[in-house]
Amino acid sequence: MILNITRDVITAFVGFSGGIAVGTGFVAFLSVVGIIPRLTQITKTISKLRSFERSVLFGSLFGCWISLRDTVLYLPNIFLVIIGGISGIFIGMLAAALTEVLNVFPILAKRVGIQKKIVYLLMAIALGKVFGSLFHWIYFVP
Image 1: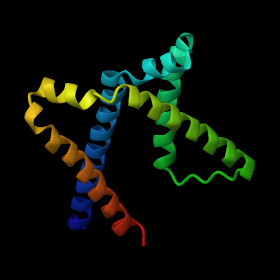
Image 2: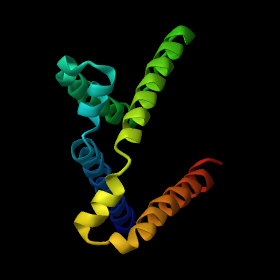
Image 3: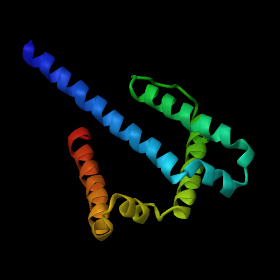
Image 4: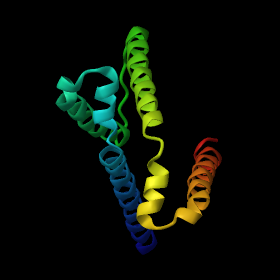
């Protein structure tokens, strides 16, 4: 009984810590890089800046809510095509905006004071993604 409670507390702590880390990284990414204002500049929709910000906010909240529940949406295939298309458009526009601000790592390295170690920073990010993906596929996908 005590072991189960301890395991549940540790699981909750790790999950909460991971959520805080991902959330702060996401907010830092959006605010430091300025991805939403740049996205509105590229698409020439600066007047819709608040709509973009609200869409990201509510989309993130909705995505978190859906991922924490066992929600099954019984939608016709046409809705799945529409949702997939909208998601693809957003990812494509986000990638286009990222190519415009790709110099974020040298700026970050200069501000933190690790200019000579930028290769290690990039390798840590790449290897973290690789090992995280491997762990996910080996552990969670049978």
